[in-house]
Image 1 (tube, rainbow, N blue to C red):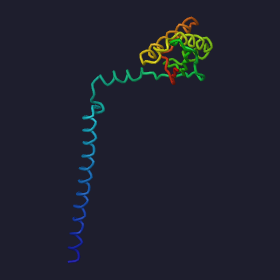
Image 2: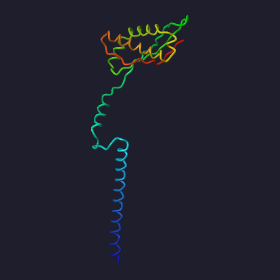
Image 3: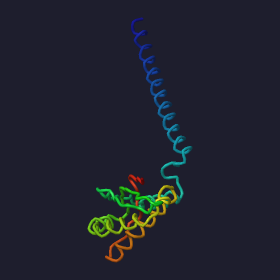
Image 4: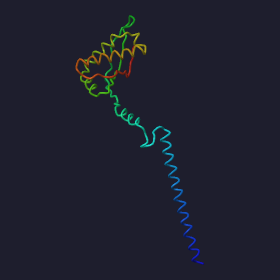
Length: 169
């Protein structure tokens, strides 16, 4: 009888081992299916099962170049045309470009550019500078002035002029 009880114990362990393996396989399969379903629903597609549009988007992402900026440390301060009174304008300016060489050229020619920007700011009307449209027009005029100076020097152009701080009084 002692042999019979030992023989029955071995098959019981085999059944538990099969159950553990089966549960592990089911859990791993459920995890794999949930990951695949999440990728498919989020539009990422399954790896290796995509069409060629994914390759085109990768090319578009590679062509993106971040902007770099150059700030003028000192403010541009000048008098502006007012209604019979002397008015002041103060602007902290930064330049943005996708080409670092354009900013290096801007830094090299900063005295000339700063002089031209002070003249542009001084020729502006006080009433126009008080409106957002007037400030946008001033930024566009400053951008054209900076790019004109850089073009005369044979340098690449900047993309935008940004106001960090702008005060008229």
